[in-house]
Image (cartoon, rainbow, N blue to C red; front, side):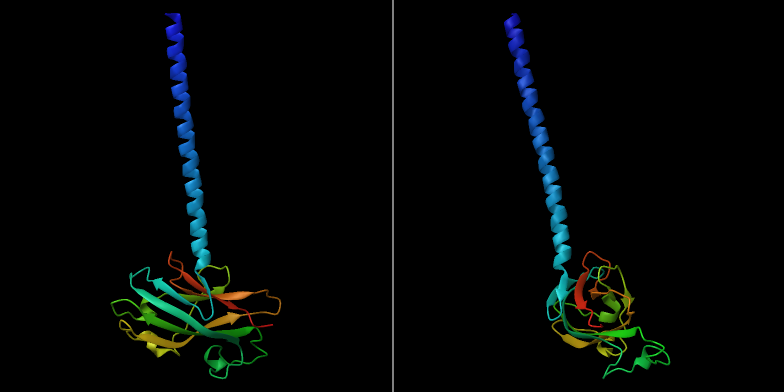
Length: 196
């Protein structure tokens, strides 16, 4: 009888031990899955940083329509051949505004959705130093199409302009042009700093 009792207890201990191992294995698997999900999120963020000339497919966070955007070219300058610096800095003079520049980003937006949208109203866009949140609003004044409806299948191309302060002591490697700013759909183009 004692032997039978001892065998029963040993059997129960073996079963409990096996259950404990399964529980630990399940916990370890959950931790591994969580780590993989974190890595995937980090990779998704990295994948959303595009270079000039590349096209991104973006979904509007606020309105749920889809569109494509391409940054065709850009310029960081205080001597634009196209734009008057006095339009951006009052009584502009290089001596008074020696660290004042404008970032000119030439972009194309293509409506791939089945509904109209107005870029200036429905697409949040900003420019910041690389790595920074938010940033300065882009100026649509020189791109009137941004204030008009873009129908399904249509594209528009024009310049987005933003102020930039770049001092001689600043170590700014790049600027970021952002679409869908500070949302999970934020998409970024890197604009290397060309001011030396």
